[in-house]
Image (cartoon, rainbow, N blue to C red):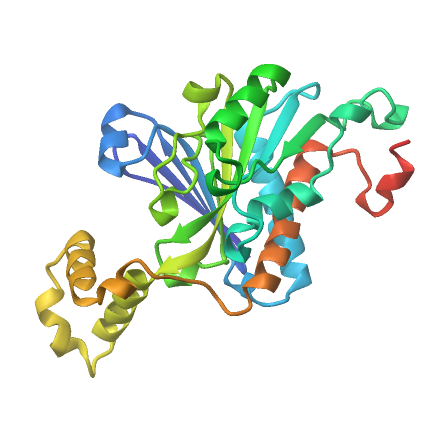
Length: 305
C-alpha cells in the first residue's frame, strides 16, 4: 500500500517519504544556505530509493525499482525531448565493487550517432544519448574530471549523468539503495580519494549523480554491531557509557581500537559479482526508460536501422 509523508523538521529542508510496499523513496530538498551548512550537503535535490530485497534475485522487485528510478530521474532532470545527454560510468572495470559505472554504460542505449536513422514513429521519444567509461587515474594517468571536462566542452551536452559506486554509511544499505542528486559528485570520495568534483560549476552544464553503495568500511560494521547490541536488552548495560556520544565520537573511538591494518579496510558482499550485474541492469534500465520513453525494449533492434 502506497503511503506518503512530508515534513520540514529543519528550516529549509523539505523531506518527503513514499512507502510503496517493498520500496521506500525519500526525497530531500535543501533550499537555503543555512540548511546547507546544517546538513553538510549542497543546496539541491536528493533522492534515495531503498529496497532491501535487491540483495536477492528478485526480478519483479528489480522491475519495480527500475520504474521508480525512471520516474525519479525524469522528475529530477526535467529534460526537453531534443536534449543531448552524456552518461559517464565512473570507476575501475577491473575491480568488481567499483565496476558499476562501466557496467551501466555497457547497457545504456546510445543514440547520438543514430538520430538521423531512427524510425519516424520514435521521433520525439528517443533522446540523443552518448556514453563513456573514462577509467580511473591509475589506468589512464589523467584525472577523470579533466577527461569529462574535455568531452563536455566538445559535444556540449545539456546534461551529464555520472554513475558511481559508493561507500555505505550503514551495512544495511550495501547494494540495497540507489541514490540520486542534482548537485554533482566527487569521484572516489567514498573511499578517501580526493578528486575534483563533477558538477555544474566545473563542467558548465547540470550534473545528475547516481550512486549505489557497494562497499562498507570496517569501522562502519563495528559501529553498526555496537548499535545493534546496545538495543538488545541483554547487552544494553555494557554500552550505557556510549549513549551520549555523537556518531563522530563513536567513529573516532572505533578507529582507535581497530588495528591499523583494519582501520581503512573496505568490505563487500561475497556475491558482489551477481549484485553488481543485477544493479547495473536496474540502473541502465531506469535511465533508458526515462530518456527513451518511446522505445519498446523487447524489440529495440526493430526500431533502430
